[in-house]
Image (cartoon, rainbow, N blue to C red; front, side, top):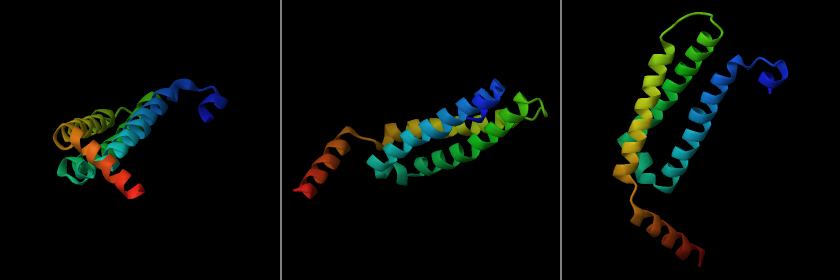
Length: 115
């Protein structure tokens, strides 16, 4: 809202990265970890969470500083690398811990509880 009201769109990059990596990516991983608790409880899930949630704010601060030309710091590279490593671990976690038969067993156990 502030970007739109002030008509200063140079921070749109920060806004877009915060939305896509902060909201959308974490919401999707949260849904996966809720539906497949074994994935969320795994070491890969924990490493994904911490790398993503440390790397993203560091990257966003670096992007903010860079866009406003306040300084030139390696924060984008450091934070971005941590966040990407977290996302790669999330993908590995999905391939290792998320199984199609777990979805059907979760649904059937939910149905039996409802009856």
